[in-house]
Image (tube, rainbow, N blue to C red; front, side, top):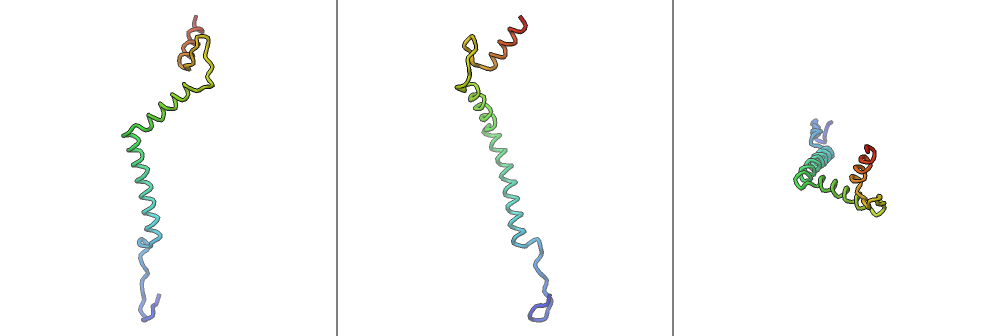
Length: 87
């Protein structure tokens, strides 16, 4: 391109285009967020806590019907069912 003074001017390098820099910065921040989230979840055992809370919720659900022994624990019901099958 020829500018007003008659000299050719080179455009800015595509690596420093503001849109390119913004996209790269956003992607870097997003990747860093994902990595740090996993580190924090591991450190505070968040995933384990969520799993245990779901088990507690399943075991204390109000729609559970007690078996003949009055037990609503699914593990105990399974063991009881296996014990009655073998005898």
